[in-house]
Image 1 (tube, rainbow, N blue to C red):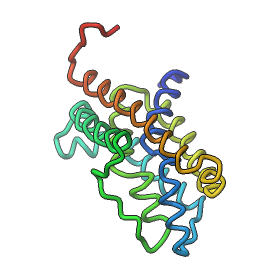
Image 2 (image 1 turned 45 degrees about the vertical axis):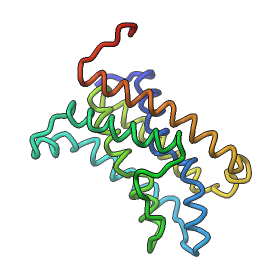
Image 3 (image 1 turned 180 degrees about the vertical axis):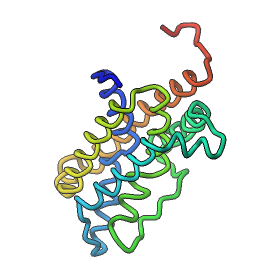
Image 4 (image 1 turned 120 degrees about the vertical axis):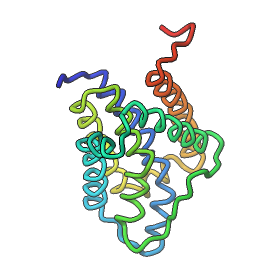
Length: 194
């Protein structure tokens, strides 16, 4: 295991874009408006436990089904591609149920630790050291916790327009990441790639 600032930064950016906690602010505000008390610590810890479980034992779990990490990463690249298209085009491909009985569901799962972030964790393992992904995950969970604590402030500061712009910018970044994941795990080399 080797610490790499570049890998930590790259994994952090990918997870930040996939988890998209700023883009989830309207959903969180809507849940709070329905009288659900969001426990920031519980939601953050639940999300982190789910994602850490897949980071640490996701590969052996895939082995049970006879799937290797590269194949899963290619499948993950398609999911990341679709999430990026959702963000860029403002459409809904993956249906999110914003109604639940508590804050763990639907905020911790599937909003934060959903199919996209789980797939991303496993896809990142195909390229980066586990320790670097773990550090990036912990940093993201700190941001998730802070955002959950100050949701209303973010809404006032960014406004609806700001949240939409942020979502589209991260959508384009995710689209590029999806293409890179696909190319890396299929072995396809673009003519102008360096």
